[in-house]
Length: 248
Image (cartoon, rainbow, N blue to C red; front, side, top):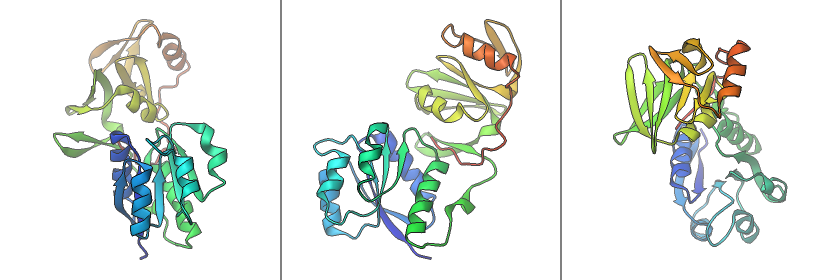
C-alpha cells in the first residue's frame, strides 16, 4: 500500500482538530506537520517531501492564494475555507478540490479520492465508511462515538452542547451552530437557538412547542415558520441516503 505525507496549513484550532481526526481515518495518508501560518508551511516544504496540503485561505501574514503562488512546484492542494470567492482563482494552481466549511468526512473522502486518482492510487477510501453515521465528540480529553440514530435532541449551554440519547446525556465543548451545520440535512431540525431535535423522535407538537423524549421544548420565534412548515409537511424522517461518518 502506498503512503502519502500531508500537512495541514490552518490557524483555527477547531478546524485543525477536525481535519486531524479525518486524516487519521484515511488509509494511505500520513499527517506529518500542522502549520498555523503559510510561512511555516514554506519552511516545511523546503525540508521535507510533502505529497498533499490541506490549505486554509485566510491565514496570517501570507494568504492561501499567495502561498500557492510563492511555492515552486507546489504539491497538490485541497482547499479548506469558509470563503467561496477564492474558488476560481485557486484552480489556476495545483488544486485537487475546494472544500467549504463546515464540511463532513464524506466530503473529505471525495477530495482525497480525487488526489488518489491523480496519483493512480487504486484503493478508494470509501470502503472505510460505516453504514451507521456517528458523531465523534471530545469528552474529558477522550473521543466518544455517538451514533446519529441514538440522538434524541441537543441543547446549547453557551460554549457547550448537551447531547441527549435514550441512555443518558453527554456534554461536549462545542457551539450548537457547528452541530446544526452537520445535522441539518440528516433528519434533525433546529427549533430554537438553544435546541436541535431529531425529527423521528418528536411525539407531538403545537405552534409553540414540541414534545420529545418526555420533555416539552419551546419553538423559538425566529424558527417557528420553518419548524411548523417542516412538521406539517410530514418531513419527520431521516435521510436514508446518508452513509458518511460525521465528526465533531
